[in-house]
Structure formats: C-alpha cells, structure tokens
Image 1 (cartoon, protein in one colour):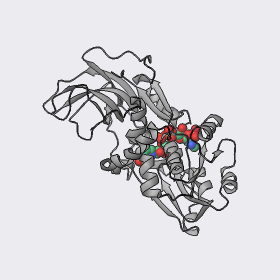
Image 2: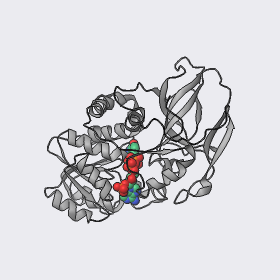
Image 3: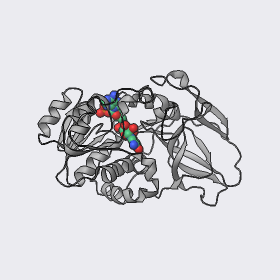
Image 4: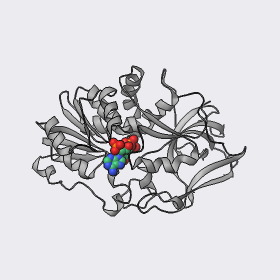
Length: 352
Ligand SMILES: NC(=O)c1ccc[n+]([C@@H]2O[C@H](COP(=O)([O-])OP(=O)(O)OC[C@H]3O[C@@H](n4cnc5c(N)ncnc54)[C@H](OP(=O)(O)O)[C@@H]3O)[C@@H](O)[C@H]2O)c1
C-alpha cells in the first residue's frame, strides 16, 4: 500500500457520507439506483461503536443484495437505507466495552465514511506480521475464506487432481486456484485477456490457462485435461460453466461458488444458467453450492493456512484499489464487465 494515496475529500467534521439505495436495479446498476448522502454523525448510545471506514470491499454479490430475489441467502437492502458492504474500519469512538478507540475491525458495514454499529458480527483484525493492512483485508475478509472453504470443505482436493477454476484471476478465483496448486493439484485457470492469463501463469504459477476471450473453452479444456476434470470451482456460470461440465471426469465434483455472468438482472429472473446440466447425471457429478457467511465461526481454520502462505509469498494476490467513496458505484459496475484486476476495494479513509 503506497503511503500517499490521493483520497477524496472527507465530509466535514461531525458529518458522514454514505451511498443510499434508492431504487432496485433492473439489469445494470442505473445511475439513479444509489445516491451519495451527507448527514450528521449521530451521538452514540450505550453499547454502540463509531467506526471510521478505511476500506470497502466490493464483492460480486453486492449487485444481488440490491434486488429482491427469491431464496436469496439474506434479505435485500431496504430502499432508502445505506448500501451494505464489508468494510475494514478503525474504531473512532466507543461506548461498547468490546471495542476500544484505535482498534482495527472488520464486519458488515455500509458504503460509507463512518458506520455506527452495536458491534454484532464485527471482528477485530490483528495485523499479521509482514502483511500490509490492505492485503490482509483483501484476502482475509472474504476472498480467502471463500476460496479456502469452497476448495477444502466442498471440493476436497487430493494431490494429483485436475482442478479447473473460472474467473481465476479474480479475488476468490485466484485464491481458489492457488490453494489447489498448494495442495498438489494440477490447476487450469479460465480468465479473460492476456494480462490476467499472463499473471496466472507467471505469478500464480498455474499449470495452464484458458483465455475465454480468444479461445474455445470446451476445446481448450478437452486438450488440457484429456482424462477429465476432477474438481470444477465455478465462479461464472453460463457458457463457461457448460464448457467445463462437458469435460468433467466421471464422479467429479462441482463447487458452485458463484455465477457472476448471471448477476446483472439474471439470477433472480432465471438468467442464463448452465445449459449442459445433463452432464451432472451422465458423469455422476457431485455438485454443491456454499455461502462463505456460513463459515464465519470457522474463519480461523482458513486463516491458519492463508496467513503463512501470504507471509512466505506462496500465495500471490492482486489488489485493485479505487480511491474515494464516490467511485464505489462505477467500480462495482466494472466488475461485471471484467474491469477489475484482482480484489476490488475502495479506499475511503486513510490508514492510521
Ligand atoms: N459463495 C460465496 O460465498 C462467495 C463469496 C465471494 C464470492 N463469490 C463468488 O465468486 C465469484 C468471484 O467474485 P469476486 O468478488 O471474487 O470477484 P472477482 O473474481 O474479483 O471479479 C469478478 C470477475 O468475474 C469475471 N466476470 C465478470 N463477468 C463475467 C462474465 N459475464 N463472463 C465471464 N467472466 C466474468 C471477470 O473476470 P475476467 O476478466 O476473467 O472475465 C471479473 O473480473 C462471483 O461469482 C461471486 O459471486 C461467492
């Protein structure tokens, strides 16, 4: 993290800014779906904490939280309220004995300069030795645990397995692919464009890469995994998932982490899922989805491997940090069009 990032001006003393959800998006997040608000910081009640937000994590699922979707894993953000997001923050003021000023904590907060919370669901983050705070947050909050539990708990790789990961250059995907490599698997990443594919080969040290923007994915996987795929870690859905399903090994495992290609107006409206789903029967596949929030009580298990890998440089991770709360909406929109390179987050306040 560079010491002198040029942050956008903060609200005046005593004020906070936040993005309010005003309208539910239909396809793309339209300009009038969210508006930037400035309000006085409320006085704290007994048990409350005022968090000064440093980083906001932008996650593919944020688009889904804006919509009312049947069977969603959490309720939609109510209209007229602050947009939700995972944040890393510094305790600015506390009337809660569990938090002291200056402490660093992360939790489900708002797209905001400040968050007032009762601390429920927040956890203190002790900065791991040798890891910048931005990197620690980028990996340890969502992407790393998602990848670790998805791969280890759902995928259950064995050394020598052939593993395919889609959106492999992204936050969750790059961790999932490298976890499989570190567990002794042969890993093939699918990503869009020469830069991302080059990074996956040269830095993340994957065995092979498929650029879905220039290659026929099904043909490439057939060539690269002639005996079939043992584990598919799926982040994209649609045609890319179909290409992998057609190349699974008998008895293989499909970990459904995400279906980002369907999120802009799709997942709630029956958007493009895999069409070649019959492969699940023909190839006797085990297919399982998961939500990382279910694993929060077990985060320590994932961190116990992720932190040493980061410290030893065995797990590479790219941060894509946008400066300033006001850029949050545009930044999130870019994610559904391959605009981010690595973990997308917004720096809202300075690190102290
Ligand atoms: N189950 C869980 O608990 C959980 C938790 C976190 C994340 N996830 C899922 O993990 C996936 C990745 O999320 P992330 O937050 O880590 O984002 P990310 O991978 O850092 O960024 C998203 C990437 O997805 C790819 N993409 C976007 N639209 C696409 C499309 N139409 N076709 C093909 N590729 C597309 C792009 O990479 P390219 O440039 O390579 O196209 C983009 O950079 C998402 O599906 C998300 O929902 C699930």
